[in-house]
Image: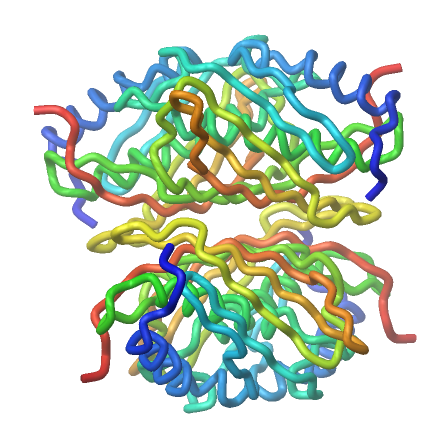
Length: 146
Length: 146
Length: 146
Length: 146
């Protein structure tokens, strides 16, 4: 994989992310973006919890899926977008913390399918612990915006 | 599987669901509950979208995971709760519609692990179409409430 | 999905199956083939076991993956083959029996991706019990034979 | 995780592996074993192929599942065995080569469930390339041997 991300691709990724109502509603932001790599962070608040007050698995999955999708989008030609075809997530520990970090890394960027692994970590008092592991297939599609 | 759901279990499922900040934030509700079966519905609004205005995959996953978890909870002894150990989701079609329905059905209720299949359908003008398929493992845990 | 399988597709599926060294080595056979549907059967023998003498999970997975792949192949245009992009399998019970049946059913035949659910059942004294559930993504590729 | 593998556990892992009829039939061997880690190797032959002459996905899955299971078994108390509850596999490239290497690494060894990631590589002319990625849940069970 190349070393530097094409600035045009970085702009397209951030613009696509900004159009996601759910990411805005969760308060999620892209905190790292490179070739085949994307990290998304979301801060804790009550609207993101499950019944025991931890981050809800749905938030863990949504943020993980999104980080993986944009990691994949950095590997497709400019002008194209991506959609998740599928993902699988294992919950390793309760997601207890002040914030959640999802870090997607492309394993294989194929012509039609891109496979990504995503680690989701919960940060608490400055220490991050792996709380979920995703494996995902992403498909390139025609872009939606001019 | 038995024909009727123990009313005590039904109360426990609904109480647990009500404690999920995320489900409240999404506006999700349980619309069907039976032995080994749970359906959750959520109505469309902009805060639940991805970049093309459809239901976000994260919402599809969260609602599917939740319906599956509570389908499993109907099969564990009263006083116990459940957590998802893992799930896998295939996105079959864009989730375009006025509402989203996730219907979980237990495949196998084991002593420690319960396996559930979940169909997620998008309803549009009164017609529902399958838009995602989940397969999930749920684990029983000690209950959190007295 | 159409009601009848194109005979040309049926011939291509069976020819492709016959070229699989592993299926021959396992003694597997296609026992049902229809539009969006394929069932594969394999008889018990010691070479197919895990450490407790049941069918090995690897056999369960291989037969399930194959049944799903050929179910998908019935939905692609004649002259094309298929490959599995990914699958996920839950083992529900030990696969104890005289034979193993994998039954694949297409959930969604898309232009590029086909999603299949596969049930794997173990038959013992004439009774079949679900022992594994798969969910799989299959991709159409150019055929390998003239 | 500890640095050295308990020799009693190593003996139990190898004895369990030796009882697997399928691993013997495939000609598979354990080539590395450490705390939370196991690598399994299998050499190419025609009985292991799919319709294009590459390693069959079923072999890739079986060897990957087995490597992951024994990686998990190194983390459970002596006297216990393990079974796979589920796994998910993405096929990244055709498994073309002289041999197949599956390398399992435990992500999280919990009290009841252990989550493992497995890389499967195909070796060709001395070079190994990642051809499949697995993510797996393993459960500890009572041992079968005295």
